[in-house]
Image (cartoon, rainbow, N blue to C red; front, top):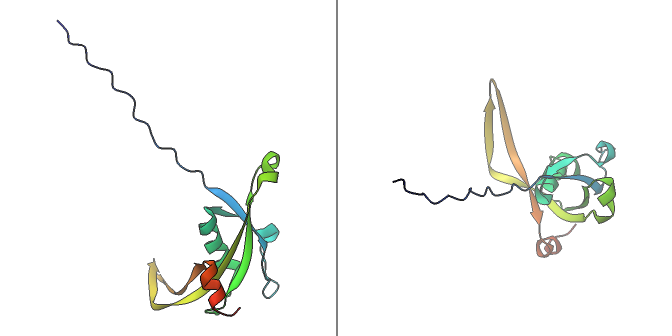
Length: 127
């Protein structure tokens, strides 16, 4: 006599959200430096905005200066009409204690970070 074991249902694996691609659409060009074709930044909208602001929008030595910029989602040609434009307001903030990273023989010191502001914070300070 063999016992019949109930069949176990296969475990459902949660779907990973696919990282999206964005490019800079509208920002103030500094020292005639800008990414070719707006650059390509992957991740979620806020992650891409932080990377773009750190690299191109806000200079490394400008603290507490508020900058506004826009990013557009890169979609396949057949979906291009559905592309969303995201507007961001950001500033560079000096860290109270610099972060120090060691990679092999080199030491990297990070003394600032980018902060994305909401509408209320952006209107409180002067541009």
